[in-house]
Length: 97
Figure 1: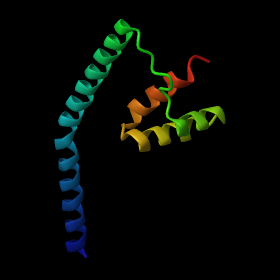
Figure 2 (figure 1 turned 45 degrees about the vertical axis):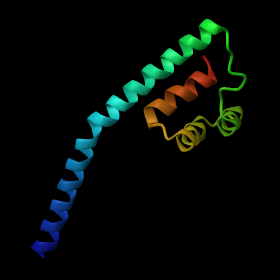
Figure 3 (figure 1 turned 30 degrees about the vertical axis):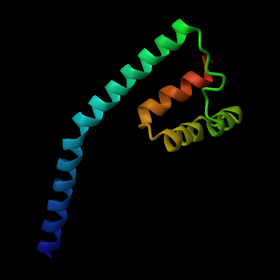
């Protein structure tokens, strides 16, 4: 009885270590991507270039129905963004309320 519990505990510990080891790289990548997007937006603003449709169609449809959670899920699926990034993006699409 103790052997399966020990194996399970070791598996959980190994999984936690693997998740913690990836976090700094993901944070750095997210930071760099944010910097690149900000700089690209500055260049576009300087040149007067407008994105005619920055909101993905599926996300726009969910927002039109008032379903913010499904819009966030759709944004994550389409872009591969994490939850925090997707939530911020969808809230910026929805605008102030």
